[in-house]
Length: 172
Image (tube, rainbow, N blue to C red; front, side, top):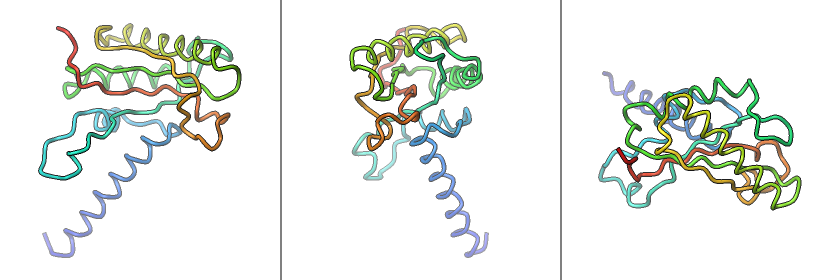
């Protein structure tokens, strides 16, 4: 490899890494299975100082529900199928996951808490039906307390499902 090719290759790798980080922050783009695996997988151990502070490992997904309901819409099923395949990947098979339901700030806090919990439960149930072990999943409703876009609490992007990798192994 020429001396000029190495910096170009490093720049390309950095650009791809930045693109992966960008979708992790924005649930607008639908990630690939590989991208989700990379985002959720435990970090490889290196001597880097970055490994001293554990980084949260999660993906934010735009899972669509019927209005005022925990009924999954058909257009979200392909994304949830990809998520199920991601969770069944050999690199993640020993991990547990927390399925968090999030709402926007429309409506009362108690109502949003209940709705987000039902939506998280609906996603977990779909994943179980797709072959993910129920002992690997926990679900929680976060309501509107942790918006993706805090400056616009009523934005549609705040209505999402966050999948968080938990390092505690599943009981086998």
